[in-house]
Length: 292
Image (cartoon, rainbow, N blue to C red; front, side):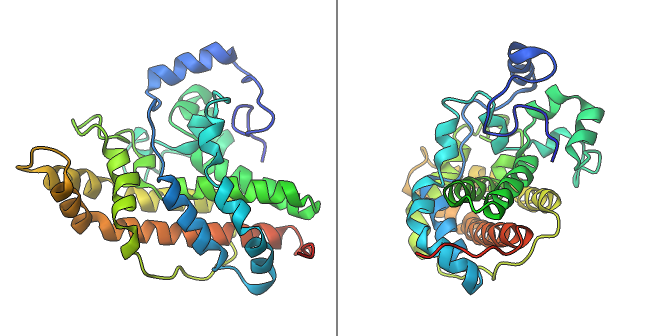
């Protein structure tokens, strides 16, 4: 995938057009999030834990042997944002900056999207689906080259980005409720709700399958999760009605409305994480994993 600089994590290079300062200015003008929350660390780890169990036996053995590493490092992209000024834009895509659902005006080819809208707008509005496609390729290349340490690092990062795609609030410019006077929505939905009620989550994701086009599949993931944005925003307002603040009663109400959405999306994230891992192995030529 021939992506412009600034999308891949390693190495970090300045953009081809306009310099670092210009990109930072464009991002600030187009409203890139400063406090963007992902699923909480516990939710990402749960998705990884379930993802390992979706894999067929030959692949599952390797990922199960590295389960501890994956659980420890799945949230590393959060740390990368402190060192890499371009990392934040890889965690979201503001689909509602591109017209009306299902946003057919936005090309799914990165080069075509940049040609149509310009690299500044595309980066400011987020590049999450393309980042997933890029990391799928990185994992494939690491597996093909028997670079096992790099493979598990790429697998952990890929899992994080796939989980991001299943957070509906990572698909909208109203990512924190800041446009509807509901500031803090992202943490209430993505972290607090999970931390309070995850012990009720009992279900099993579908088995991993081969993904024909990793980037296109990533777009389908963000489009599907985006359909829940309005429900989450309305539920947050409804749950707070007549209450003095975001107390236990609020969270009970909020969970009763959107709890099933949280469970559905984390389960789907686990299925898709497993499917991306499995696909990378297939596309790498089904290499033999090292003995453990």
